Length: 128
Image 1 (cartoon, rainbow, N blue to C red):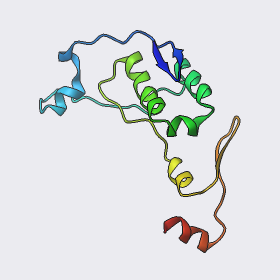
Image 2 (spheres, one colour; image 1 turned 120 degrees about the horizontal axis):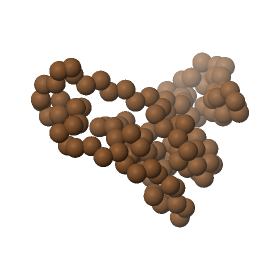
Image 3 (spheres, rainbow, N blue to C red; image 1 turned 180 degrees about the vertical axis):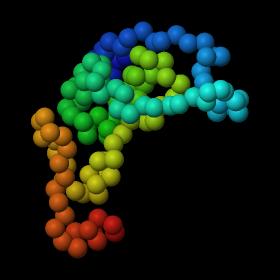
């Protein structure tokens, strides 16, 4: 179980794997594997119940992205569940325009929306 913000989130038991059976890590150590490992992990966690519970607790997707402890937890959830060898720290490309002052919101059932920038001066201000 993981404890964040005083609440407990039930995580599944980690997938047990021997150190010798970690293809990505062995290749990163310089060993050759045939066939070489393929590493795919795209949005591996967002359908997981523990992810959904934490996102709801945080109040939304951006709050999850901007909370370093929660982002680390979301990064580790699929690793615990599936025993992956590695991960990319959880975040989203949408934090970039949001951090530059562009309004961002989420439409239920549709996804993210960005306020369009209508003027060159607004774009220059975002770059400066």
